[in-house]
Image (cartoon, rainbow, N blue to C red; front, side):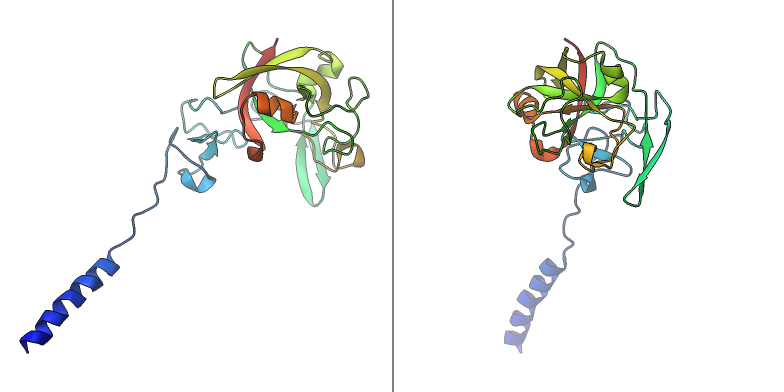
Length: 218
């Protein structure tokens, strides 16, 4: 009988160890570390490795922290209409947030070469551009009817790196979903659409596709 008791004790201990709850996944609050949306609490999203307000929904849960947040497209100007394509509706904008010495924006990745996702040739010069060139397209409001064509802007990333790039195109915030725009919907009104050379110069991971930045005229 004593031998049976000795065998039961180890089995009991093993059962308790197996039954212990697994450690809960850490959920980050404002400015907390993150890798995916699931790492952030509530309505917060993961921007540049930190949990922050979602610029697209205009939440203000965090007190403007994070360095990579950007203004909601509707914060400083109203939509001029809606474009429906592919079963979805997209807001159209003819304006962009006011330009300052450090304007918050979202940097996206664009292929300016022929056959790339940029669609037709650049608006400013009617040419395609090699992705080794540091070139950008600006949302319609910032493009301002081509007044910034050929001019240099300075882009600063949240990692502290900055680079200059030439404005060669418009990131159309009104039209889209056609061959001229490579089937893509209208841009939001706070976009700086950069070539891979811009992303590389800033030391950014192109797989992210979109990151928060600030920009100004150089």
